[in-house]
Length: 118
Image (tube, rainbow, N blue to C red):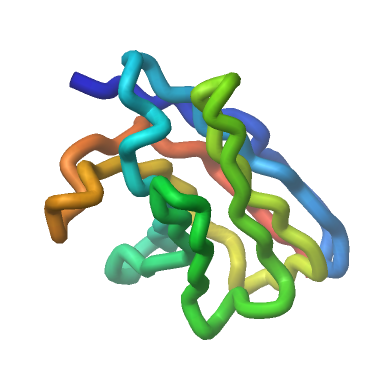
């Protein structure tokens, strides 16, 4: 069982930056693929970024070049550095985890709100 707790959300002006953190419980964090998703009101959940257990990152098209995902296995934490934020980045951001042998993310955090003002 993995428990995920996000932090770092808040209100920021367009063009600004935020860093989200997601701390995971459990002893097998280093073997999990980790990801960030987001969901805006009235919209479907959207993939933002993921990083495999071996450290390979990949991104959704809407955030490429602006967001960076990273992980610190010693701290059981995954980060999402968000730069050049736009009002359309406003959403609840969720951290997710899965075994690298599974296709679906099994574990989810409670979410953290990010609001970007114009």
